[in-house]
Structure formats: C-alpha cells, structure tokens
Image 1 (cartoon, helix red, strand yellow):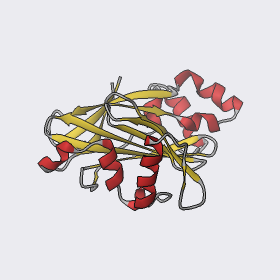
Image 2 (cartoon, rainbow, N blue to C red):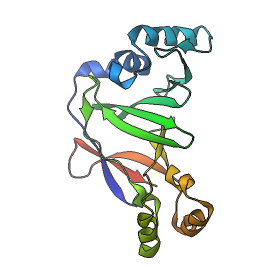
Image 3 (spheres, rainbow, N blue to C red):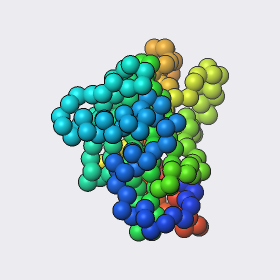
Length: 210
C-alpha cells in the first residue's frame, strides 16, 4: 500500500464536538456554495424535511439535497445540472473533528476538488492523490506512454457512509478506444481510501489505499 499525507490538522475547541452535518452546512462559507446563499441553504433544508424536491438557486437553476445521513454525518447536494457538493464530518481521533468537502463537476465525465476544514471552516493543508496512484508503477513504459498524451488529470471523489473516500480515475474515460486498450492492463479505475493517524505526528493524518 502506498501511503500519502492527507490532513494536517489544527487544534480545535471543544464546541466542535456538538457539531452535526446540518450545522456544518449552515455555517459553510458562501464561496463554497456559490449557487446557495444562507437564506437558500435554510430553504433547501426545510424543503427536504417537508418532502419537496428542490429549490430555485441564485442562478435560476435547481438545487436539491440528494442524501442526508445524520447518523453518519454525510450530506450530498445537487447544486446545479452539472455540479454537486458533499460534506462529511470525520472524527479520526476522539479529540479531532474534520469537515470533508467535495465539489464535483460533470460535463459529462466528472472531476472533483476535495478539501479539508476545521469546525470554524478554516481550510487545512491537504495533499491529494494523482494519476500514478491508479497505475501499476512497475510498468514504466505504459506510464511514460500515458504521460506523452498530456491528458487532463480528472479524479472523481465521493464520501461513503464509513470513514472512507471513493476515488475514480475519470481521465480514463477521456481516452479513445485504442488508448484505453493500451492502458487497461495497468489501470485501477477506482480506489477506496481510508483516513488514518500519521505514525510520526499526532496532528497529521494519512490516506491509505486498501
């Protein structure tokens, strides 16, 4: 397994421990939800609770909650026709709380930005994976061939109901049929990633591939 550093955490106050996923959503800075201002976020929550399908967002499109799992602190929102965000509260240790944030755009293949925040919505340093994590690194010739194509690096992330993150290598679907055939033997189209405490520093965390 290849270990990569994911989170470098800041110490946070005790008020974090009463935080739930809707609290996190309500407190989320506007720049992370450009289609939804604070009033629309409240309307969206009430709409979901009352069984309505969606609300009109700031750009005359539709936004809706597609999943609210309060037991597992997981929220998924379709923010527009092509965009969605996901929030999940992680507690990797009894004294640390992290808000995971994913913004995904699908046009039509999906690519994501993944970030980490503390409970005050201060962004935490985050190192993400790249295309080599999806490849058999022993096959240097095929990796060099892939790199010669100069393809965009698209990865779709999604939180699960456990403390894991699913990662899909969507760049693969931008390859033509012949390129896919050449890369198929070394490509892992998806990975399951798990957050673990960093062995050498209790305020850092790592994401391990299974």
